[in-house]
Length: 200
Image 1 (cartoon, rainbow, N blue to C red):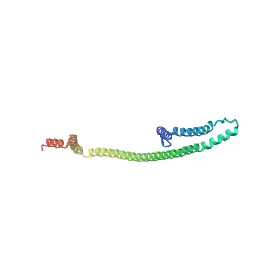
Image 2: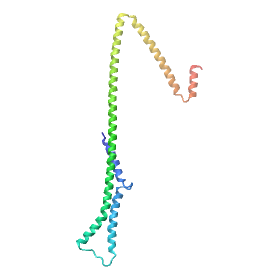
Image 3: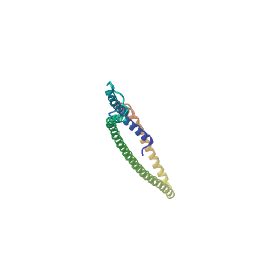
Image 4: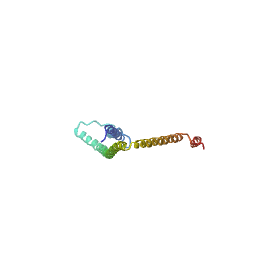
């Protein structure tokens, strides 16, 4: 679904596109061109008769009707061309909006697919967590049973646990050593530090 902010930005972009139609000169330029053409046509007609000495504005409505037909005949193709341009532009905008809607729907479908996958993974993780809890409980029961059967088993188990802890601590110490070596500034520093620590 398209968010409100996305919709506003799309509208703002479409408005900018609308204002830059007709080769980037803008809607104002197109309106100005139509008005200028009308003024030139009417002006040329008026100027044609203005310099004749016997020219008087007619009071006959029929002549004014003919004049209106003349002006309309000249302006109608220009206005029709402008309307055709606006129609073509609106079709282009609708195509772009349709493409944006398709992309938004595709993104939403991808997001939904990811959410389904995530939910499936969470379900699997929950199943593992339940299994781990059951195994820990079973281990606890085994330890309790073992203690009742053989008291020395706890001592052996504790000894093994201590050895495991020592090994883990030793490993962690070496990991810290490697990490501190890797933080050195250059390979030469690492080599010198390695030689110093291990007496090489």
